Length: 202
Image 1 (cartoon, rainbow, N blue to C red):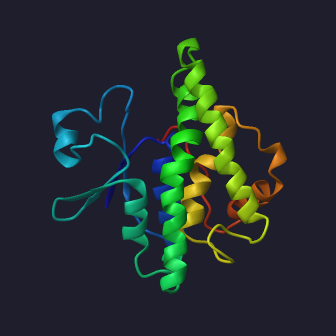
Image 2 (image 1 turned 90 degrees about the vertical axis):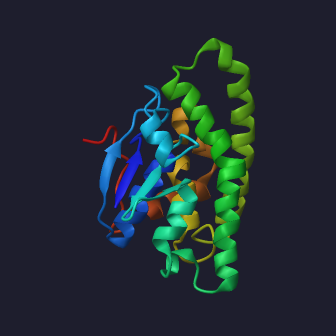
Image 3 (image 1 turned 30 degrees about the vertical axis):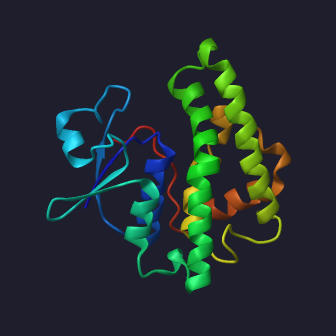
């Protein structure tokens, strides 16, 4: 199993977190998106959308989209939910992560960390922070009533949302007013198979 990814990317880090949790072996191929390495003919032949992470499987199969990769790799485990309702709850948060959380929290981080916070992006950054705080507020409310995003157990919902939440400060987000989120981050980081984000991969 081969994972094409950028070690600084939360979407790619999700795959590392899951593989560590499940004990899945894989080879990591570091990809520099800023150098255009996802736009080469060779990469586009594997993923026409030109994005990472990308999972390479035996038989020439390639699966893009971080949350699709999570679902594929965790199939048959409790991380996808133990019954129909639990699975739907996990999916709810995976969709929330990609629609309401990642486009804002991750994009703010990209503007600050990857692009160096250029003045011409200040208006966009302000918009992304405002929307990101709204998403964090929703998470705070939910986590104030339970230990994990989709209920009492650790699932793909937590892996997906942890990836960019734990580095939200790199995009200028202050989690000081979010005690339930901070406690949730600590719970995840105390898991026996937790692995930190590497920057960059060796």
